[in-house]
Length: 244
Image (cartoon, rainbow, N blue to C red; front, side):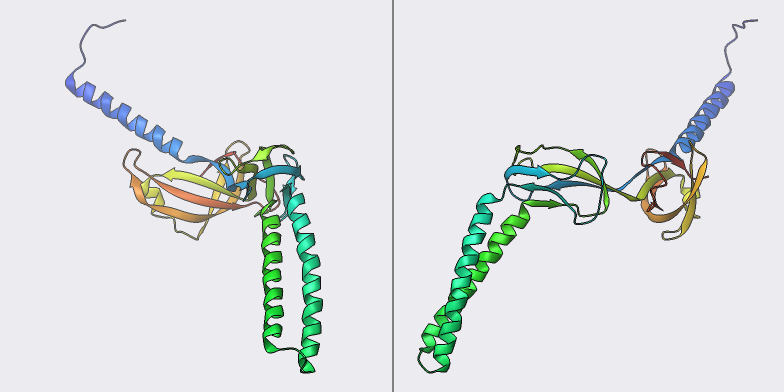
């Protein structure tokens, strides 16, 4: 049966409150769910411009900290280093001879100082060339997984677009949850908590890494950052999590 009677202002007010409360409850439930994320996402970039000589990893490969991922061309620098090493050998030999002559009082102090200075200059030159070569070697700063290779061998890498490889650190995962202030009051930074992977119903221990001192005025929630230890790779990044 359909009634044509208008709702009373009181009924409309009650209905509005119910809808508002339902919306708030839905928003609160939604805010209790977040997603696991890599602890860090690192764009490995070239420190200098040049041509990419080789890429030593592939997407999906696990890498160790300081592992070489790729190299830029260094043939010219290597040739300069070979010349500098040869000159350094000659300078060292000359320095030893001058030192022997000085011990026999057959070399002036100025000559001893000059040959010592020449050796120091050549050593500095060698260090500079080695540093330039090292700057053309791309290493992983962390243990992680290669998720993207942006350049192929023989492609140029410029200072305006130096990104070559992306590495994600997933031996730890981060979950950001936006919780009601009343729920946050019982939490403490550095303490343990139990999260739940909602798809697999798998509980997991986490550490509360950060509690925002600010309540978001739009949602009325507080961001809480949880960290999950994942050295064994048990948990996947991107999985929905909640705080039971």
